[in-house]
Image (cartoon, rainbow, N blue to C red; front, side, top):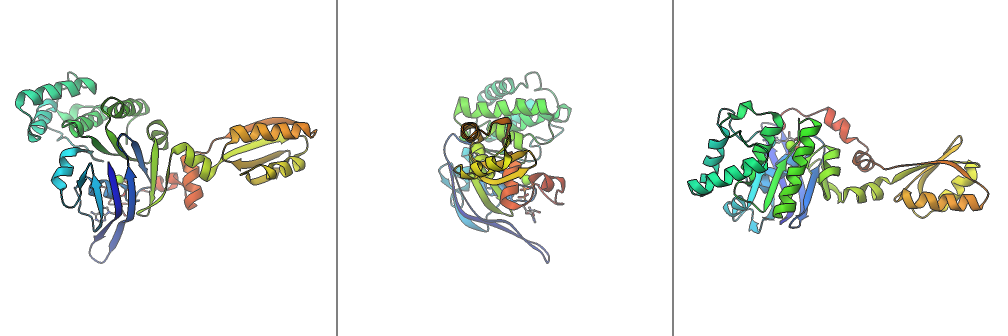
Length: 323
Ligand SMILES: Nc1ncnc2c1ncn2[C@@H]1O[C@H](COP(=O)(O)OP(=O)(O)OP(=O)(O)O)[C@@H](O)[C@H]1O
Ligand SMILES: [Mg+2]
């Protein structure tokens, strides 16, 4: 559904040049829900805007929804939905009129447009809102309206830029259900940017992590946590030094440390490695009093890869981001 090679975007201003996207390669298969994750200023929005034809790449090539991004941007536009970081609908517009106008722009007859709009307002829990002006909607309703605008023409591929930013936890999980059902009921491919790690865990089957305009890793959320950071296993054995020596022998065990009465180490699959080690220790007359297995977060993964925390980056948003 998406195939990108060597995509770059350089912004040249007076006296300063920003290499916002720096040689991105990525592939997304039909029907996947892929999360594009990275700190502020990493190049997520710039990549998304290029892939949705809103911004011309400096170099590189891409096939998007079966069309060549550079040769056939109109074809791409017909086959994608784009839900931007800001709000799509004009604040003073009436919800129903705005949607019908939009649907007519896609070539629907007035009757077909009305029917499609009614259907979507119901599906996205916006029934009864058609006569309201956009500014009177709550944050969550407004974000759902943005999605309705993005999917009016039944695009097979939907780009969402930080869909749940600034929503309360309940509205966010409600939105995630709507996004999942886009794929589950309509087979849509979803490519979304986020820096919410819970959003990734709840929604994304695969993630791409971008930092400084480059993809630094990709994989399934669980796979990356296991392979890159590993589970942190902490044991309280009768003889910590002997237990540490046994832990060193476990395949894939790393960072084995003894701290007083406890031994800790990292391993890809703590849930199988810890019982195995405990059986070995038990048989050697070194019983374990307590065990704890801590799954890493995606922030741990980012920290392992870059030495920085995604959260630190979030706390210092760059000026001039977005539009
Ligand atoms: N129109 C522009 N002119 C100059 N620089 C830009 C422009 N748009 C983006 N940038 C810069 O490009 C870099 C990447 O920005 P981008 O908006 O893609 O980041 P992002 O990953 O979406 O960040 P955020 O999480 O804050 O939304 C930043 O350094 C940004 O300041
Ligand atoms: Mg952005």
